[in-house]
Amino acid sequence: MNINDFDFELPEELIAQTPLKDRASSRLMILDRESGKLEHKVFSDIIDELKTGDCLILNDTKVLPARLMGMKEETGAHIELLLLKELGKDEWETLVKPAKRVKIGTVVTFGEGLLKAICVGEKDHGGRVFKFEYEGIFYELLDRLGEMPLPPYIHEKLEDKDRYQTVYAKEQGSAAAPTAGLHFTPELLDRIREKGVEIVFITLHVGLGTFRPVSVDSIEEHEMHSEFYSVTEEAAATINRVKASGGRVISVGTTSTRTIETIATKYNGEIRAESGWTAIFIYPGYEFKCIDGLITNFHLPKSTLVMLVSALSSRENILNAYNDAVKEQYRFFSFGDAMFIRPSDQ
Image 1 (cartoon, one colour):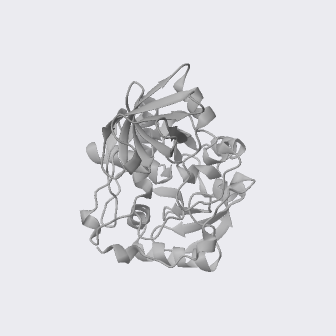
Image 2: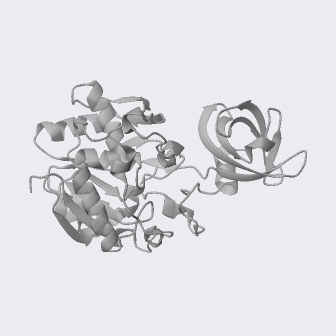
């Protein structure tokens, strides 16, 4: 398949720059997984789409305020660091701007010396490894000095850091939010539980590979970046029980989907408790082993995420839905509206 098979026209003004005041008031497009039939609702209506005995899978990763603005100790030059992955005690892989100014041995300070970073290694594409020095607790300093690493298509400043976190965010480690979950409120989750829907939390720490464009023409040649996931015994048992009793497994977001399908692929559809790294790439032709339905946002043209949702429904259904979303002035991407790819049994 060619990358251009997943392209569509998107007016720039439809890229949401700020979150809505009420999380659950975003719009919700319902797409029937098989037929491609469309309905237009409000996100809080998702309660009507879920059934007693269903299982809803949420990714409880928490976004780090991982963008740090500092100064090169030697010259006072401005340096921007983006924390990508913790490699060991106080050692992080980062992206640096401007990378050409940072060599091994370069010292960068933040917050007038509250935090200091020494470059100890170089990676490709502007990547650097830094060793951090500080007094106190690193994550408290990061919360004080860091900014949320918003996607490159969001140009507005985020007034409230918490709006780029889900209300159930718990496990620190993401470079980006699992944005399908941003629509849920504690009240809506309570109502879903009261309906008899099992809510399961898994963890996948979203990497910056999420925003990296596919750079090959033939999508089969694309390689995904690895991301860390973790599934507990309780979560695995609940998903297996729901599946065995004929309930539907609905994932919230492509990250939840990739986590569960990674494990289901390894164990013939069974979900087991484990932690590890996944680079699973789901595109049309992939046969889903566990996930029946998906709540997700509207994704970038030619992105791996558009390919994933096309695999769950079909390329034709998804592109038709996206063209309808443009016509109906839906809001796109991280702070935008939502889609429910509904299993075709209702």
